[in-house]
Amino acid sequence: MERFKNKNILITGSTSGIGQACAERFAKEGANIILNGRHFEDDEKNLIAKMEGYGKKVKFIQGDVSKGMDSVSVIEQAILAFGSLDILVNNAGVEKSADFWDVTEDDYDLVMHTNLKGVFFGTQTFVKYCKKENKPGVVINMSSVHEEIIFPHFSAYCASKGGLKMLMRNLATELAPLNIRINNVAPGAIATPINQKMIADKKKMKALLENIPMNRMGTSEEVAGLVAFLASEDASYITGSTYFIDGGLTYHYEEQ
Image (cartoon, rainbow, N blue to C red):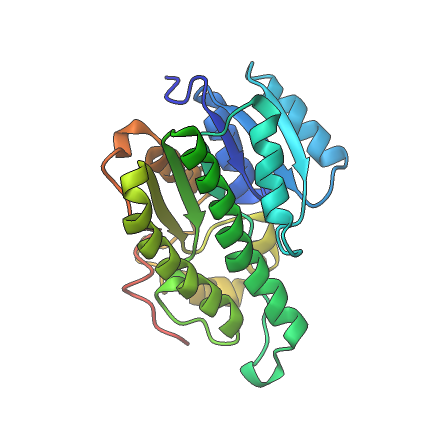
C-alpha cells in the first residue's frame, strides 16, 4: 500500500533509531525521503543505498538543528531537494542527565535549542512555505511521555517537551485554517541504540519493566507505524493531540 505516493517527507535526525525507522516506513509506503543528520559518513551512505532500494528518491541534508537557525536552512534545502515538501517530522532530539543544581547553561541550551527552538523555527519555515504555495501540510513532532510525567535529573529535557506540548496545541488552532495539521507522538521506553547500556543493566531493566503494564519496551518500528498513521489521510481530521506510545507507562508510572 502506497499511502504516500508522490509525497516528499523530511524527517530530522533520521539516520538512526526512531528517525531511521520512520524514514524506512515512509519509503516503503511510496514517499520520497529527505534524511537529515549532523554527519554524512559510511552509515548514512549505507542507509541511503538501502532506501533507494525501495525505488524512491532519497536525499540527505546535513545540518544540526541545535545550532542557531540551522533548522531553517534544513527546511529550505528540503523544499529545494524535490521541488516541494508535504510532511515534516520533527524527530531530532537530545537529553542530558544531571541533578537540577548541576545543569550547565551549555547543556540547557543544547537541549532547548534541539528539542524546542529548532522545532519552532523549522516548523515556522515549513508553514511559511505552505502558506505561500497555498498547499496543505502535516507536521509531526517527536515528543516524549515526559511532556506529561516527571523525569528527575532531566529537568531541561522535561521543560523542552512540556514546551513542545503547548507549542503543538497552540499551533493546531492557529494552523487549522491553513489546512495544516500538527500532532505530537510521545514514546515511552523504546529499544533504540541510545538505550543499549540501560538494556544491558538487568537491575535497571527490571525496575523499568515494573513500570510498564505491557512488560516490555517498544520498538522503533512501532513508533514509525504511529507516525505514518498520523501523517496519512486516515488521520485527516486529527490535529492538536499527543499520542502516547508507551505500553501503558504514562498513567502507571511511579518514580523509584
